Image (cartoon, rainbow, N blue to C red; front, side, top):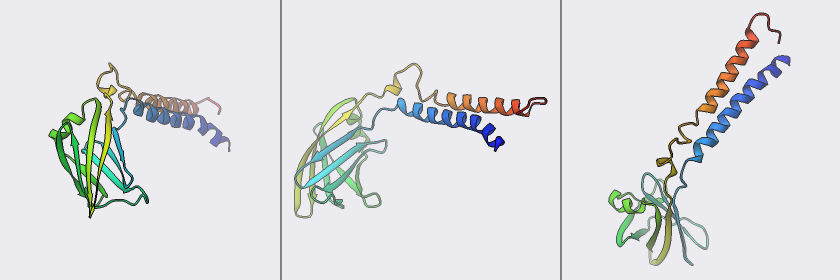
Length: 170
């Protein structure tokens, strides 16, 4: 049991360092832009990610996913048809030219036209894109996230070496 007590301090310092590094690594990230559109019949949530503008559509009354519909999204006077992806159950717009304007910081108005069988609906949403703080600081918090891990490991190694040194009583 005494060996277990000696093991707690370095292990706790390593775990604390990993936790601090993980929390610090996410501080500098900008939030993912999200657009929400609702009507009496449908709910749509769009996320602007690296792959494009991804939409999830549900029926408002049951929250059941709307699959294999036709979704058109208009922004800045240009319209794109979202491609349904059955494996993910979502709709993707990946046109880089169309997305370029939406990736700029600011609030972007979106108009959605949804055709589901004999049903159709017009929805509006707003996509708020924040400037990525990671592009501007002198030192990014993500680049320093490994420092606490290294410090925790160093403390653990020094403690272990001290414990193993001749003449040192545990």
